[in-house]
Amino acid sequence: MSIFDDWNRMAKENRAKYPPGTRILLLGMDDPHHPVPPGTRGTVDHVDDGGNIHMKWDNGRTLSLCSDADSFRTLTAAELAEEQAQQENPTEDEGQDEGEAPVMSM
Image (cartoon, rainbow, N blue to C red; front, side):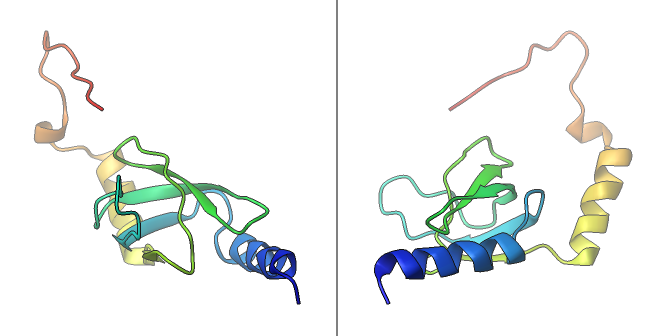
């Protein structure tokens, strides 16, 4: 079996397990230079032909996951319900004060 067969198998498995829109919680990332912080949540954008899981992280990052190197899990039904409730009923602390300009950072 070649490495291309391994990538194809992993891509198929990851596409089945993590379709676009799947919510993920990062536990740890094997990236020594610019990892996404543990505890960050994100949404699966797509899985490429190498099996990498491309993410849209809630903190604005887009670094992909490697399922055999990074540690992560899908959000539970309770966590998804909690996120939905927060989106429907944001608290006052999460809102922006009137007249206050938005702040962007990298």
